[in-house]
Image 1 (cartoon, helix red, strand yellow):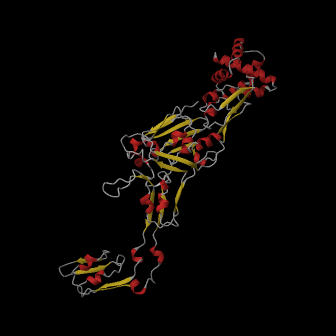
Image 2 (image 1 turned 60 degrees about the vertical axis):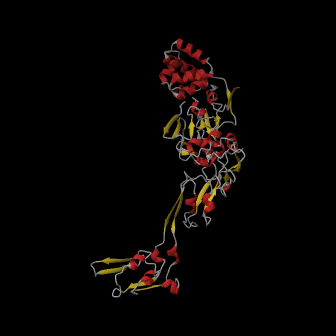
Image 3 (image 1 turned 180 degrees about the vertical axis):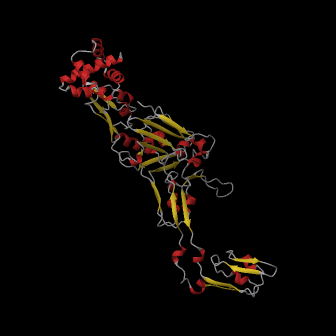
Length: 346
Length: 149
């Protein structure tokens, strides 16, 4: 029988067996959050979770998981269990997420472009830097309307308007000691009238039309910001931060696991390993409310927890209990696979 | 020498197949032997008694040893399958337990293509299975039972 072939590339690896079918498992260390679900679901004990605490703190430079290619039977269970898609399994080149007989965790994160106002709140909040909001701002000139004219005969070339213009719309071209040109760039001018008010010789005539007559000659559509919000599926862990911070409910997140995160603050030694490992910024140390006071040792924003269990694994004093009560997964006819998926509940 | 033993095995299979009513043309295809050689075999010519005697001994091997030996010596998968099916007379029923994870190791291991995967579970065709138990030995979850009928 064909033996497994392992290929290691930096911290990533591939394990492959080519016989009746070509089976291949690929691991991307950058995507892995070190939760250990793969280690617990592997039916043959081929996967070993690394020293995640030291790895996330950059104390050691190692891959987050190790695989024994002689033990691995290339069944693909680790790939199905992985909540962040760090392990991809393909059969004859097709990812098993596209093969119906294999079960699949149900999770998603989407931003609806029709609803999105491109405020970038999600981009700032995302703990995985998985969101990029590419936006096209409206043209400034189309948002204002007015008139401006500088009487060159009255103008004394003092340069005050040029210095004061907040939109950098006025330029003076000094050609000689008494020879100059003064110009207003109407694409930049916002008719704020600062120049008019500041001019010591009243050489500037300017009026803001919208202030005087309303916005009758402006098209509201010209004020819209357009764009696209992109989620990098590799980096996204479906934590739900984007959904929470979105002011217009454009972001929708479905998490693969349901559960409960329990902290035992009597045991916690505030070492911070859990805070460092959490891929979702769920755990944090509170700021003390007054000098010399200590509030809770450790706090949680559980609504962002994906119940991956990375914090529980990394805690040296068993102060964290991650209980998975539900696994959202497509059905499978295989009893052993169903059993393995159910075993992720605890 | 290996060629002689291979001839002996093919001879034994050919005799069984003739008894089962196959024509020489069909048999020559099934065993990948040209027709004139086959007709020599069946008429008792051009094959040493020693080869037949050794082939008879090989036939008494355990199914696993017989299969592995035949596979190594015949170097032709279809002919191996025919020889194993005709020379090994015991019937086996193979059962795959629900603990099967569908890893496909058994499919890759089976020398006579008796196993397929369906819905993440191995299915063993008992009509083809020769009882070698190689799959059961390799199964990582001990999910295969092969019983002699």
